[in-house]
Image (tube, rainbow, N blue to C red; front, side, top):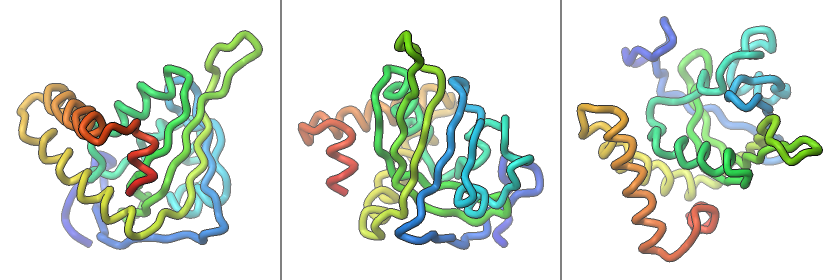
Length: 179
């Protein structure tokens, strides 16, 4: 294992990529604060947690440090506005392995139209799309890390994403599917 310490004590990045079947779907649901309220068997297997270990924990427990924070800002801004989003995400397993997903995250509404939870289905991504997403995320992470203030760095990277989308003349979902 490489000696890169994670935010969770005792977890190191292994550099090992896990994969799951093209016919499998990782499913999780969170409350409006991002705490996990449901995780299917594929999620538990890929993340390496038991149901007891994962329920009521923040979904960020599987956040890989290679993921730019600005991508999650975009995700949260979108779903909190009541819209769905697709995104390529590199997740972290409990043992330090990682796995890539194509996530589809949607808000769940009550009868009055209020958001009560979020639902995420993740499929196995195309390898060529992962390579493109990984290159973009390295660029965004470099922008984030070039600022001593984490919030300023995240905002600068977020503006870089917005500019890239405006330059391409496409919304984020179309951009994701073009990868």
